[in-house]
Length: 166
Image (tube, rainbow, N blue to C red; front, top):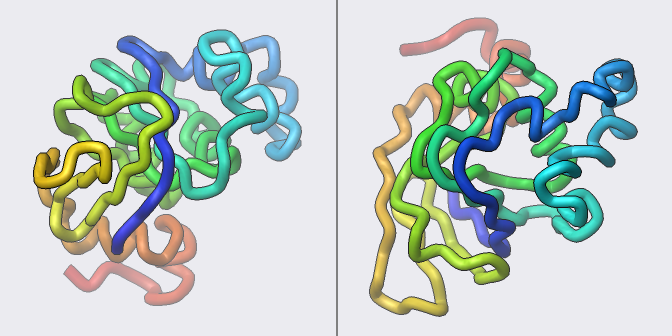
């Protein structure tokens, strides 16, 4: 799977409370409305400027805090096709994969806001036309996770295949 898009870059320690501010918790049964408020306290223009296929890039400790499945879901609903971070909370990572959003961990210091990226999920590499020949690598995604991502998440995967064929 090859993904192409522009970068929306944030910093370190973006929590699930930053992703979905608690004051909007009452909208959890109205996901399209909730998605309009994604990241509004740290990036007020995020929901209005992100385009389908874009990448969310951040630093360390992304998705820390409570286990809110809605957090990666509203990021996906905003149009983000992959999250690229230096590190992520494990529960956020698993929730994102289960919802069909890849979370890739690598050095994000050279990635700039607004630049174009090409991500090869199976190959574990990120390329940028702004830096030809200068690849960023991330750990290879296990085959079972690639299949889950390819189907759009765990529920669509199970619906299609019935179980895991490990």
